[in-house]
Image 1 (cartoon, rainbow, N blue to C red):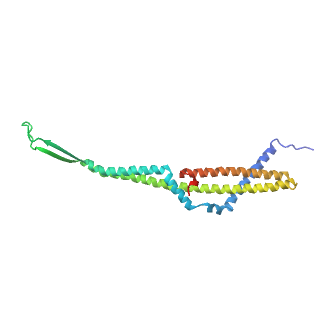
Image 2 (tube, one colour; image 1 turned 90 degrees about the horizontal axis):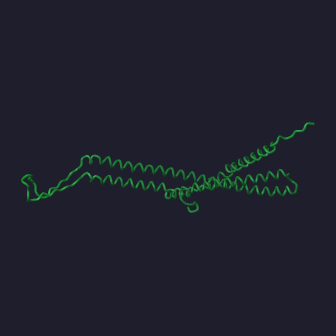
Image 3 (tube, rainbow, N blue to C red; image 1 turned 60 degrees about the horizontal axis):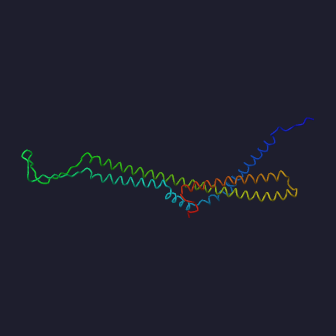
Length: 241
């Protein structure tokens, strides 16, 4: 009778496929659990009063906001300077002609102090344009700050929601690990009594390992989401009450 010999590496390849399929099955179950059972829990964890505090904190601490305030202050001073420059178009001068010692060659008709008051008509016509330009520059900076604040608010909300989601996912995965630990203890006890096969016991151990790896991954996502939010706040979340 002909004997069939397995192709080298076939068993290893099949084992890898089973492990990969099982890992994605666990992920699907976890995600399904979050979308189903914990959907309301995620919504309940969102605190809109706390979110408003986060937005206020970001507005007061994020350096770009201070930069816009400084630019607005400079632009306001520019408007005041442009308005005061109206006085620059006027000039005043005086001349003193002595009462005695008039020259016969160049006689002076007027003796004593002579005063002159002059106005630069060209500068006078340019001043409204200069003032309007200064006001326009102030308006542009104010509008840029409004756009920045809208973007900042949206960014804080997005990062806060990402943080809440990551925290909820981590909670679900942590509970899954605890459930796996309880299940493994039960299977181990039954395996020692000969009630389950080694393959079942080994599969349970593999399940626990995959869930632990998933927990570590979601723990990293939670830390990244928290750090990303705190970047806008300028302080730790724990410091905001």
